[in-house]
Length: 162
Ligand SMILES: C[S@@+](CC[C@H](N)C(=O)[O-])C[C@H]1O[C@@H](n2cnc3c(N)ncnc32)[C@H](O)[C@@H]1O
Image 1 (cartoon, helix red, strand yellow):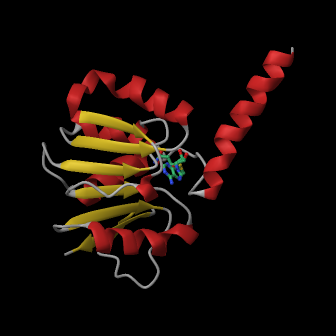
Image 2 (image 1 turned 180 degrees about the vertical axis):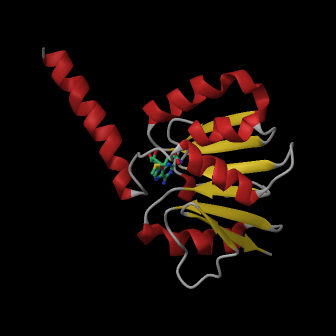
């Protein structure tokens, strides 16, 4: 009983401490995941980053389109689930358990996020400072303040960085 209680506390902790760094876990719906991939419009072999990859759902949809994908996830339980779900794609898909704010973004052609409004300006600054080549950002649900939206589909917003 005590073990069960400790386990429940650990779960509550793991799913709530991410609120200090980003959005809580809430998966993107399949239709919106596909819309994001349509909007970002990458070629097979291109690299997509997912900042806060949750259970790996969007990564799987991207891998099914032939993309290379790297997902960052702070919650170790979700990172483990994402890793298990994407293992079949081999080296094309990588799950990194960690805080993406602390990582220098690797080169990629596209980035997908589903965060919270209060992090969008910080994300804009990070991408602007760290991208060495043009990159497209797709954000589900939340906009970047004062940045021009290039396209929108089903609540997913496309932005470009030169
Ligand atoms: C709203 S959920 C979206 C999950 C997934 N991207 C999707 O669309 O289905 C946000 C995810 O980001 C993770 N997260 C939040 N802040 C993070 C950070 N700083 N570094 C890595 N992961 C983070 C959360 O644990 C959560 O799984």
